[in-house]
Image 1 (cartoon, rainbow, N blue to C red):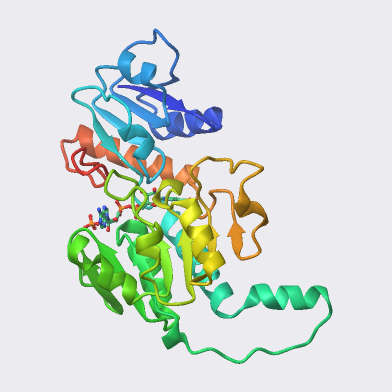
Image 2: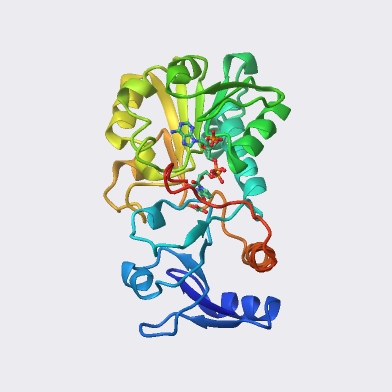
Length: 306
Ligand code: NAP
Ligand code: GLV
């Protein structure tokens, strides 16, 4: 069995060593142009030339949950794409989003500003019933996040493509229920995959439907959000701010207004990182299952884009 590795921005040696140790019967090599045809690929944002040359691939393992970069490319005819299925990401995402929600709800940014001036000043407690949180995307990450928020007793709404029933979460689905979901929400969390249907989904008309004082947490992809619409709704006072982990251009350009905005918190695409050892174990487990002819989870459906 031959495995080729083609990941940009990744410490290849550690991945190669881990894959070789876990699959001693396989030949695991970093991809170079002209290399022999492989059966499996482990990739992150590979160039089109890699996919053009490796036309016999059976399965392409993406070392992230989001496959939007891969879906823009022309894939080998018979290759299945498999994304990471949690692999240690959902707990990170739950802690990141709960932190952003509670930081906003408990006004911790204001307390930090007070501390800088040695001010001892309480704010009035706020009722969490006035801060319903809406999670867009109730997949591997979104469901975990929604349940974690519900455990803090926030009212939680969720929106997905297909209908769902999740304890403690009021579930909405499909385009017909998007407006109802937004109107029931004050803090909006985006955990959708980036597809042609979800690009620009957070724009003036949708964000304007959030309850007054709305707050946006984008931890999915930058292209879900229309940057200038967010800025103008904050400036108008309809929205109270945002926590943004992902951006249309990454790294976020130095002159982008998000950096300096007093009501926006910026983090560098770090809310749920790929954990190498867990990811290698998951990929190797799936290769073993496929070699035994068994079904695996996490196969991307090209028609829906995730
Ligand atoms: P997932 O398991 O595929 O879940 C996607 C969810 O979105 C599903 O509930 C799906 O509905 C819903 N959805 C998809 N298209 C929709 C549409 N048109 N309308 C309504 N709902 C729609 O994905 P995941 O593992 O939770 O990951 C979600 C995204 O998070 C990834 O694609 C990636 O972009 C992002 N991410 C970011 C980071 C970071 O560090 N910032 C880390 C990891 C992942 P159904 O359930 O009905 O299919
Ligand atoms: C990170 O953004 C991922 O998609 O895993």
